[in-house]
Image (cartoon, rainbow, N blue to C red; front, side, top):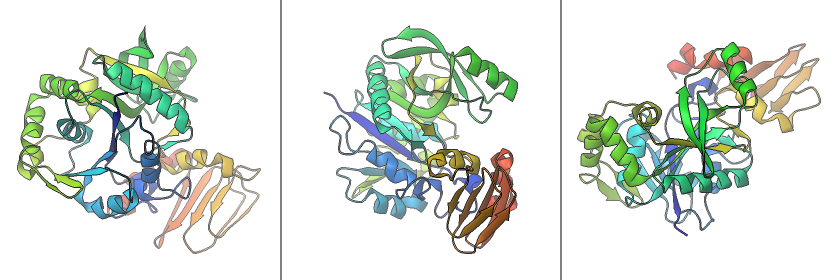
Length: 346
């Protein structure tokens, strides 16, 4: 069997999980859901399985030491060190340019939680089969509620193991999200993809020729240093950053999706983390870590790295104490945490 090549993207600073997530140690490298970090979980989902090749990680230089430490002794793992942050399309293109044209790459964010690893691997195999037929494949996450924080994929014609994508939809309002949920024809866009490396680069050249050309310069002009590869700085820094969705997926005529019901969460906010930790909640839906006393509370997430949290009579609130900072937000308001001065200026 031809192996699938995992590509793990480590980008972003996780500002909506401030004050625990900081630029120096952002969300992927924190043990949020278990004793393992989200990055370690992403690696473990594909490690030790001969259907998957050694992982390739794409990240900035600032987190090189964290990544190498958390990769540990993962056999054959490689780190591609981006000279600058340019969003997901250039990062994925770098990985594609370092792989054989016929290699099927499985692109995974480093900061998502997936409860059912077997379902993830089954979806990956189905996506890889479509990618070998030169479809550009997204994972369509089973929508379980009307969510306004995610993009959506509308299912088109059935394919072997998946569906064509009829259209990509931006984050909807609540009423529209409910319509999508009720229809049964829409899935969340989870940001997980499968491509044949050469085909992805061809599509990028068709839709973003300047970006493709700069990536093709950055790789042969780069250099290796042990397990790390450093693309050439000048061409890569000249790229106008863009997501893979905007650069390629919304423009290609070969977009497909595989349905994935795997207990997925992007852990994008404190509310999302609270939901991911529901199995650790008390009978009132409260989750605590560290010294916390809750009386008459329900649906409260309380996390502290030292000082005691004491709360009375609160519902659906997140209280986070970390690094000398205190955050209090309703679950509903958690999306806005990244706009706070503390999160922006950390």
